[in-house]
Length: 366
Image 1 (spheres, rainbow, N blue to C red):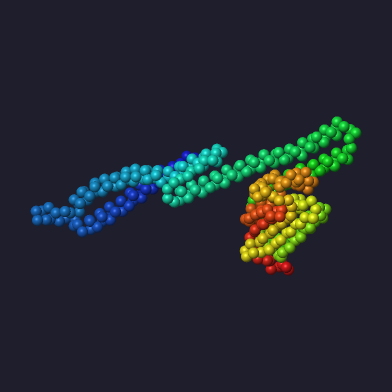
Image 2 (image 1 turned 60 degrees about the vertical axis):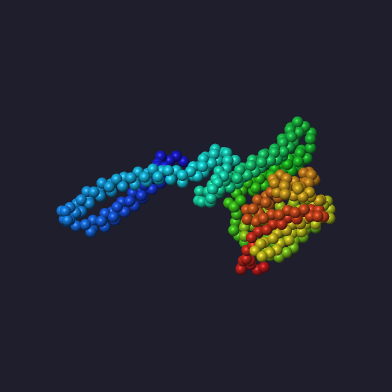
């Protein structure tokens, strides 16, 4: 934004200091002058015919008072300029860092030393903001690179299938159409997941009371055919667990957790348990599944975009696009909650979501 040139803050502070000092000096001289002249007669004679009178005092005091006022004004201007420069020096460093950040350099830090005051608190807050911005930008760049790579794969497959259909008219068109439909559906799922993952954390949140037990039952009912197809037992336990947030996003969160638990399970005979409960002021959702053992160092990376737990998931028809737990992490963070992933000793994964609990609505019958 372009602004017209104006007085600098340093000059304004200098004029303020000098003006305040001049006004204080003038008031002091006025008080002294008033009290001094109050007790001096207009005309008096002493022993030798010479005595102080008001006329002589005025002629003597007025030049001295004018010189004192001039000195105070000059002293206020010079001292105020120096003092304002020292006071505003931290602000100059903060401004320089802000300009560097505006030009794209987020690695610069102010790191202002000294005891805590308003400027140093501002500098520390600015350094913290720069660190978060740098981390966010790096995450977005990494996410964009991964997303472009993942989107390129289904597009390349579609292009290959179209080339085959054009070059080989005898090829079974139903088979090509089925494969194109599957690839297109995967690309649509990936695009929707990317759009959801790119939303602002709190910009689209609702503020409704949501029962996590009902959300868990709905997600389990949706994914029950997939679990039965794989021979996996899917159970939902626990009582009413109320929290505040977006019902749509919380349903997506639980659905992703249950689908991940079903897909990354044993080939047959596995189990998935979804449990909800309230502990004090916290609403707890646990999703536990059997499955192959997971290395402890792999578990923290599962919430990163495009990370998959096992190689089997790469070729599975329901494997997803590697964004399930990343979306869960984003939704939990948007609701000011915490997400914990822990490998089970006997194999599989235990996922725990902690959200802020709220009172049950009065109109609820549960």
